[in-house]
Image (cartoon, rainbow, N blue to C red; front, side, top):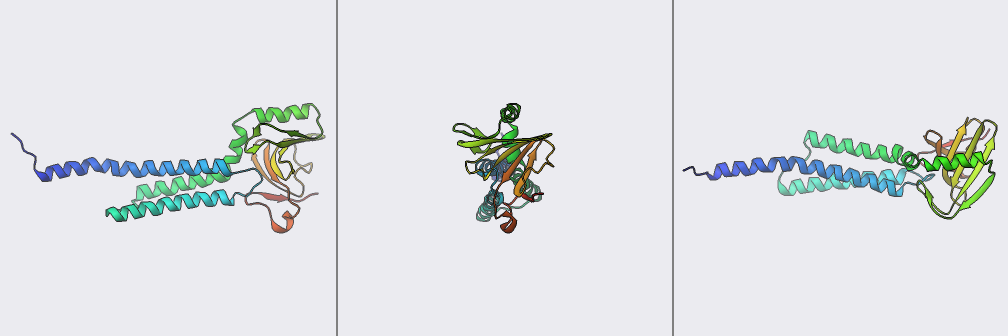
Length: 216
């Protein structure tokens, strides 16, 4: 008859807890990264500064890191092992890159119907703006306006707010024809751009993430 000693039983309990201690921080960090990415998806808008969404990512990860350190201190365990810390910093960087480079391009790239609408407007030789009262395009909710501009060898279709102060633009052909003159613009992917129109931009500067394009 074999009788387990309390020491052996304690060792078995500790060995069973170690995998959980390694897995839980990893799962929690991935979960926080997904939460930060979802928040960016909800609050990023074309033509608006990316400073607040990025700041929110930093706040989320800073709060999570501080919470982990507090829990570790209360439990008397060590937080900040090289592997977990590296993953924490890596996923934090991924979240920031997603917010800055990924959200807006993804918002129009996931649905090819937006490009079809733009090409249809150009094919119909539409001019001026028309109001769309229902639906959405990317992060831009109705009501919004579709404005079409066609010049030789190039065209631009804007999907903009009612005040035409910000939105998306689908540019075909060369962009050297003066598109976005005296506006703040940002290339997203392929023919897609985001823009912000502000007469004070030359003085106050563009929203964070956008570049001022002076007129010819």
